[in-house]
Image: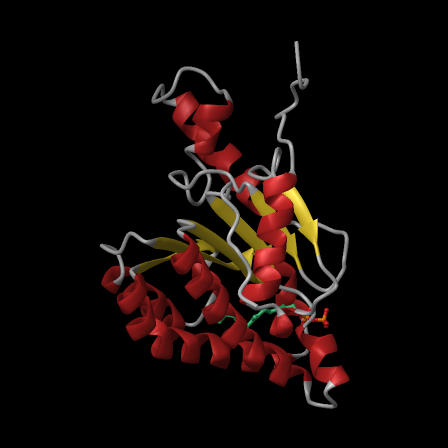
Length: 239
Ligand code: FPP
């Protein structure tokens, strides 16, 4: 039976895509096969955002810490990333998806950097879903980078004071609203250095489903749970 989409939807969903390795192990496959099938989940969830009218989706695809995984796995992840960028452009154009990347792009090969730029340029005018992929990303590094930039601007008088709004302008994606919902697959109860500033009042949802199995129906369960949450942003219910 087709599940009904809830009325109250998040504007921005962020996802920690976890469990590719465990999924592969369960299927008696190599870890990289989990990443390969994980790409199908990326497409499926992006498509669901388009279908439901969720305008912002942010995916944690490769953390700064992931560089220390075995060389072969890193190599395959880079290969899959390249393949993803090469293959998904027609899908992004068809669905009106704009690609955005946060993290340290300079950590990647020149070829991948050129692919990032190409797909971002081609999709720049799309406006249905802003798909942000976090690559070589660390929330702490993003904050330290912002502190450095803001202190330079403060020193030379470009800004007068620092508050939440001023600070946000120095993050990787200043124009993207903070996530309303953060989903983590594979049952781990951690934020793993993801969007540390931005998730201050984000609702969290953790599911045991492993990322390669996380598709439209599982996403709908998360959205239905979100619709039930009472968001108070630090305030009280009635006053
Ligand atoms: C976590 O699973 C997943 C990753 C480190 C990589 C996520 C990558 C993809 C879904 C494919 C590439 C994505 C794009 C956008 C091209 P894990 O390996 O930590 O799983 P485990 O905890 O079960 O070992």
